Length: 464
Image 1 (spheres, rainbow, N blue to C red):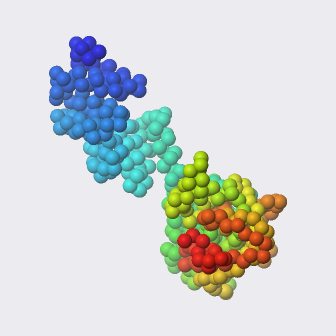
Image 2: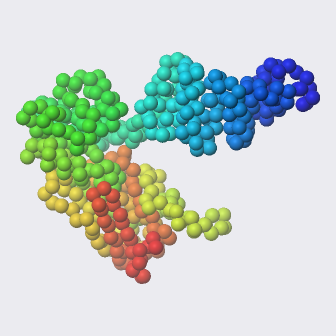
């Protein structure tokens, strides 16, 4: 085959090489390129194509070598820079890759493949705005380009967390929060919505009759989106979107003159209550932003726990035997907690549920930084995990929570599905008997929660 290839004209060999690469046979393409280089060792196009094909076979060092030679011989061709940038990206040389993509774009500014590659590299460095701009340019040049469309959507999905979709579609949450706003808001109310997201709660407050709503959202993409959503729904005359974190708000410039909000609504809670900075957010708002008698929704946030038997849950983060082999050493790298939707693991509650922390968001009752709990086991079984859930007390009449339904139970009407449950696994699982007491110690630092469960026999932490 090599002899017949050598007898073909150079241009025909390069065409064949390109066809082989397009048809998924880079090895044959490499053969054709080498045939050209056997008689034309400095053929820039053949060197570049060889480098590209070697990269497709996984031989990245050789690919980089031939692409660099192609650039050295003819530095004014964009494609070798593009493919050398892709090789550098794969081997972790991000800065070198960026320089290659920049040069390729200078030479061929309207090439959608170059724009995509450069955008993905910038995206990897966290330069999302620049990446988004390049992808938008590529889309305008070639709207039907499949990878441009894919990359645009992937990047957009990184700009807004996926849980926003589950949250806005959580009917129980929406109904209960809007009902609490209706019980609180009057025609004279000025409402502050912290972490406004899409503007949903702000529009609820406006629909409840608030005179004005001030909505702050730190994410610039979401803030811009909220402005569009509010306008489309006809509330832009009473809702002002501010692209700031609440701690950056200045009442002198961001609020109407001589006005302080008298209602706060903020859904800034994660699956362990305080991970999104809820405590500092509410405290700052009380001290610096709100009227002295402002109403807070919610007014209290609680973290609950339950000890459960669920082998299915345990397998998400623990290991013992697999196909007859001992894999317990993998538990050195087990997660501290796992997050799952309750329906995916089920389980049997082995003891009465218990509050771990109760945070008074009105500031009237500080929560201790550490608690000790002695939990009495009510049912014999194997304890696989401590499952957490949260409850938000919206006002005197209503609360919402994500308490899972355990064996023999059904979900309550205030169950909010958009918060997943978080579980701390017991590794190894512990056999328990009715009447046994498990000691649990929990601490928080206003941002994170840490829990230690103790062995009732040795008195040592179970995760030692």
